[in-house]
Image (tube, rainbow over all chains, first blue to last red; front, top):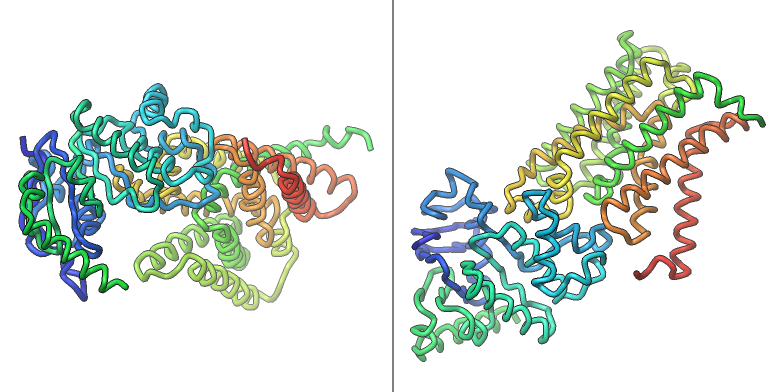
Length: 239
Length: 272
C-alpha cells in the first residue's frame, strides 16, 4: 500500500532550484535509503515532507491526504534530525527528552519500554548534555518512536558518531523495519550501509535520477559509478 | 528581634505576595533563560515604566496602564523580530530603550519625578494592599494552571522549535503565550523588586538551579525554593534592619548563586 506519494515536487530558492520535479512513492513496510551528494536537496525534501518548508510546487501526500490540507499525518511520523540542536546546559534528562515526544502524557511505562529497547535505560536520569554522539542519537530515536509511529524519517544521523554506535544504530533500524514493520525513510551518505539495509533507493541530486529496488541500483555498475562521480565532484567542489 | 513582625497583617500580605511572585518568576524565568531570552523580563519591565508614567499622568491606577503597554509592546516586538528576522538581543534592546524613552517624556510632560515613580522603580512590597495581594494570587494561580496544562508543549518548543513543529505543536502560538505570560508576570512583580531589578528574579534562581545538573522538574523545584528563600528572608531582614527589600532579596539570590558556584568548583555537582 502506497503511504507516501510525492508528485512533481519543485522547490525554488532565490538563488538555486533545490529540488526539480521530484516524484516517487513509498509503500508501507519499505526501507527507503535516500542518497545524494551534499547539497542534493535531501534536507529540503525532508523539510517539505515534514511541513517545515511550505514553499514548494507539486503535491506531497501521506496516507492519501495532501499535507497542505491536514497536519494529522504528523502523528504517525517519528523524525530524527540530522544533528539535534539544543543548549548544552539544558536541564533535561534522557527521560525528559523522550517524554517531550510522548503525546499521551500518562503513558509513562512506554518511556521505560522504549529506553530498554534502545539500550539506554540506564542513562535515563543523565542530563542529555553529558551524552556521547551515539547515545544522543539513540535518545532521539527513542523520542521519535515513543508514539508508535508508522513511519520513521531519519536525516543523515550517523555523522560524527563512533563505529560501534553506528553498527548498533544499523541493527536497531533493521529490527524496527523487519520486526516492528515500521516504514523507514533514511537519508545517508554511506552507500554500503544503504546497500545492506534498504530495500529501496532514491538517488537524488536536485532531480531524482533513480528510484527503485536497491538491488537494481547496486547491481547496475553504471548507476553506482554515476552516483559516485557526482558525489566526488561535489566533494571536490566543497574543498 | 522577636517574632512579633510575623503578626503584622502588612507583613502577611508582603510574604504571601512575595512567595507567589517568587514561584511565578522562577517558572516563567526558567523558560525565558532556556530560550536565551534572559533579558526579556528586563525589557518588558522597562517598557512598563512608560505604562506607569502614562497611568500617573492620566490619573489611572498605574499598574493597569503598565499591563496594557508592557504586554502590547512585548507582543509587537516579538512579531517584528519574527517578521524582520531581528536577533533576540537586538529586539530586547529596542524594547528596553523605547519603554524608558516614553516614560521619561511623559514624566517630563507631567512635571517631573514623584514619590510614586520611585516606588515603582524600586518596589514597595511592604505596601501591597489586600486587593493587590488578591490580584497577585489570582494571576499566579491562572498562569500556573496554563503552564501545567501546556507543560509538554511549552517545554518541547523551548527545547527545539523545529522538532516541536514536526511533532505537531503550534510553536508560534506557544511563543506568543510565553511572551504574554512573561508580560503579566513582570508587571505583577514590579511591586516586589521594582522595574530596575525585576530580571534578577527571572534569571538568578534559574541559572543557579541549572548548575545542579538535574532534570527539568527538579531544576524548577530548586529554582523555586531558592527564590522563595531569598524573597522571604529578604523581606524579613530588610524590615528588621530597615533596608530596601528589593536590594536585599537580589543580594540573597546572588549569594545562593555564588555559593552554588563554590560548591560546583569543588566538583561535587559535576557527575552523578
